[in-house]
Image 1 (cartoon, rainbow, N blue to C red):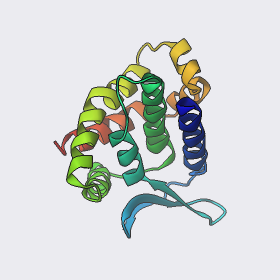
Image 2 (image 1 turned 180 degrees about the vertical axis):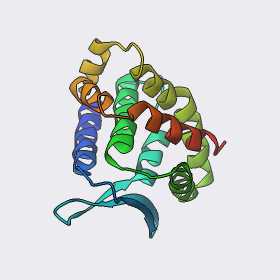
Image 3 (image 1 turned 90 degrees about the vertical axis):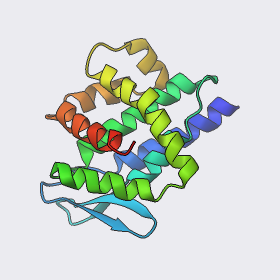
Length: 171
């Protein structure tokens, strides 16, 4: 039952992330209200958002050592790939500003859990994706085809390194 609920939530979140859609090169980062979002203008003038603070909260709320936790970790790692591939940040300073703004929306306990889970799970999983990874495990998590597609995006690894550097600087 727990796995079914987790998978339904993950499917809903994945659909939300996928809806970030294709954007042109004139994207910018903006903060609004409580959540920090990456905003860009699509060619058809629709505005799209990516909730960085929400992804940080999801990272903080990851459970370890429970049934399905390793699959959930791969799904969250895939969400970070979606963020770096679909939402253009601009300069390293823009990335750092967006990361800091999202981080400041978290309470102190959530900040500590986010840093712990990001450094011990998410960062290692995403780094693994840029090397040799277990296709069967990614398939079990339902993200194999998504990951293959996202890794083919030009500059994905360098974008990931910039984002990871900005997040690790929060410690």
